[in-house]
Each structure stands twice: as structure tokens, then as C-alpha cells.
Image (cartoon, rainbow, N blue to C red; front, side, top):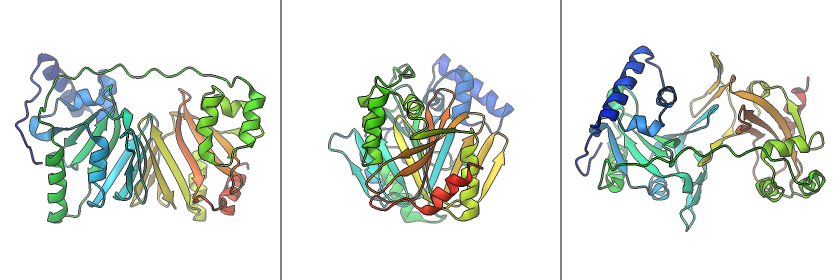
Length: 357
């Protein structure tokens, strides 16, 4: 990793003690992920990451939109977005990046498909993990130190041109001050459940939708959280399903060769995969898609509810499977693969009907 200026390692007694605790955890649980270790230790993921040696961690300027734009066409990467219940990993080349003039939002279209809510991205770091058998990465965190998104270097061995470009990008965005004190914000509280102010008015507006993207505005207009809106729309537009429905849907999609869209997000990002799925496997509570360019890891013990949801559009009704965790947060959404202007695939509707059995 190229370092533009000397970095000062964390040397406080608190940092040293935290590092010792993490080293002990890793010795006891070699496969423990940093996110889970941070949760066990009662700190944020970034706080734990900052105990890494200076030559393993570089602070970048907090210009997330510019960094993503600079990655456009650079080479093959793996992007990782997650929430408490589901991890979404996609491999490909970042292309077609569009960052709003405000710098607060953006998107990336193509084999890497992202919706970026950049106002939540407060900290950026380049992490070198080759010495530990991992891959170099760019990692982005919110104001509380929670991970929003990660991008892993995935060049072919010996691809010197790509590696040089990756290192040059890191050097370009390396922050002058490497270890400034950080006042981490408290994690954002979960908003309370809120039923629609007028359920009949919500149903009327729901029926009048012409695009599925209008749904967020509908919720805001009626003062409703997503799950409360689904409950109010039962049974006309929404139907509760068994909590393992997403697993059965993915299994049927693999068996039938049905292409899907899988959405996973957190407050800072939504990551999308479009295509078929093939290699499915379970490992303990985790149900996994393990394909070459797409991995999905869903924690069955954390997904407590699934819903079949129907939304009208100019292209006909669009059906999805929406999955929620115990905090009533949306953690995974499945659609049949489609593009705007094209009706929903008959195969997806047939798959959904098969789930009723």
C-alpha cells in the first residue's frame, strides 16, 4: 500500500487494551469477523479497525463519491454491503457511476449495481490485509463507526497495471492527517413503528402507483413505516409468509433457472444483483448463494418475517418478497429480473404461486 505521509499508530492505553482483547478473541475464534468481534467487545467496527498497525490502515479523505467515481473502469473488484441479517457480495468492474452535484447521492449501473446515500458515509480507509491472507480493500463507515460499504481489490495475479492503478488511487485520496481524534456519534435510534394515518387513503394511493419507486414517497406521505404499511394493505396488496420463504424462493429459482433481482441495503447503500443463482448451501444458521460472481449470506435466525408484496406500475403488477428482521427492518428483497418498460416475467409469478403450496 502506498503511504503518502507517515501514520501514527494508536498508542493510547484504551487502544492498546482493545487491541489485546481483539487479539485474544481472534486466538479463541480464528474465523471471527471484525463486525462480530466489535459487537462482542461493545465498540464500533471502525474503533476496532483503528487498532490496526499504521502500515495496515490508511485514512482517506472523506470524499466517498469521488473515490467511487475514480474506481470506474479501474478493474475487477468485489463490493460488499450488509445489514444485521444479510450480506451481499458482487464481483465485477465498476462502471456508469453518477454522483449528484450535491455529493449526497449517487448510483452505479452494470454488473456492480449500487444506490448510494452518501450523506451517511463519514469515514473512509484503505485496508491492507495481504499479510493476513485477505485482500486489500476500501472501507467506508458512518458517523457512529458502523461499516456502510466495502470494496475489495480483486485483480488477477500478476496484473501489475491494475495494481499500480489501485495504489495510485489510494495515494491520491490519502488524508494528510492519519490518526486525528474521532468523536463517534451514537448509533441512530430505530424509528418507532408508525401506522398510516388513514389506511383507506393509503390503499387508494397504493392502487394509483405507476412506478414501484413511488412507494417510498407513499410511506412518507402517509406517515407509515414499511411493515405497518404492509399490515394495513393486507390482503389486497400484501400477504404475510413463512420466515423461510426467501430460502424456498431462491431454491426454486435455482432449480428453474429463473433470473432474479436481490436487493440488500443499510441506511447508506442498496446493493443489487440481477441474474440467475446456482450453488446454494447452508452453513449453520446461514443460507448462502455461492456463485462465482455473486454471494448472498442470509442469517435464518435473524430473519423473522417474509411478505409477498404487489405494487401496480405502468408495466403491470410487480411482485416482490420482502424480508424483515426482529427490529422490523427490511433486510432482503427479491424480485423477478426485469427492466423498466418490460412486464414482470411469467416465470417469476409462477414461482411465487408455487410458494403457496
